[in-house]
Image (cartoon, rainbow, N blue to C red):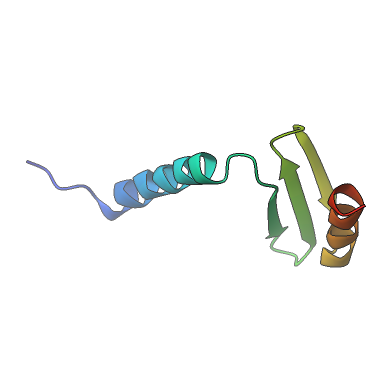
Length: 72
């Protein structure tokens, strides 16, 4: 029997982790940060309850949006 390569294992692990996130945190607001090779930063949020996705250029902007949506 051929053993799984590390790349295949990592790929399957990523799929498993994504599935767990959906199952465990299905209705929770999801927030993540991305930056490109040039160092440009972007924050994203997704609300699975409403289906709404928003992007912001700073963590401060994102916090303000979250507070306006969920704490008023």
